[in-house]
Length: 416
Ligand code: GLV
Ligand code: MN
Ligand code: MN
Image (cartoon, rainbow, N blue to C red):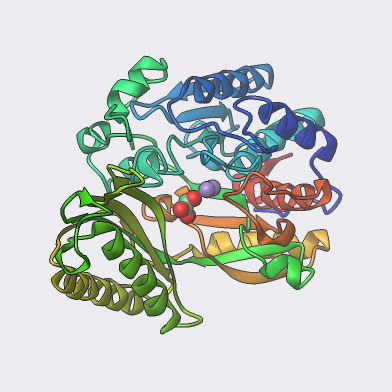
């Protein structure tokens, strides 16, 4: 396809205004957002996005996982659509841009095409994937995983939040369970714009990350069971302290990740201690180990070492354990042609760029299995994300959206 002219740009002010308006829905407590998946505020955000899509002349489809697909027709009825998008759900203490930039950047492409009266050969579909974050219902990227055939839909419906509510019930309750069969859509390509969520681009003063790979991930949910007893009167040698077990495993995960620098990361994010009383030794702890690496062998070796280490910790403390794999994907290599389209778009537009590996998981990681896929990244301040203080500059968002615009329009083909 012919490349679009270098003067083709999105409307940065309009994109920014939409980001700020979406951020009004589900505000956090420190300037960010708490718009967790399948909550009332998630529904409200979806309605706003739907209204904007309809105002831009798009036709909205919703699948049985609640994923939203807003379509702008192409000139060729046979041509498969180019998909673009990300997610509108946030962490409980999330930022205004993680995911949202990719969805509203996609919408901004459509608005700009409308302004300029540009037609494309392939349709363009802007997508909001349900439950990317995985914070309320594990695993992350749940709907895109079902779409790509990685998870069974029924299994996804049975995922439970901390209050015992299932994904399926909550999807129905908020009124966003569509009719459309999940994964029935065929894609010409998929592009996702996202903030980097790490410090590399900002440190190197680079406008655009051309994402060539995504690192692999495992989430192990660990339950340690000891015995609740009095903190004052239980002799030290008689304690079966599940809290101490958790502390030792947290240390172990950190040490194991340090053994594989710079190729791995690891932490315990979610932690529960039961009964969580000041003067009771914790009888049960539940926590999630998150390990990641761009190297599959490293990821698997860390997994094995952590499992063996948990066994040793538990033996020493006379406590028992259970380990469940609640999230997993192997490292991803994005499509060469789509990656090239992103790199060439950055070059054409005069933005500085470098190849980069995504540290975070993204819907693009699953969609890459069923369609040629690539990602565009822009920097975020101090590399900070999954924090209400997550911040970017308008110019950074505009550069990312411009590159997305060019890559998508070139792939969809401009019709003269
Ligand atoms: C998704 O946000 C992840 O955990 O990488
Ligand atoms: Mn995200
Ligand atoms: Mn996230």
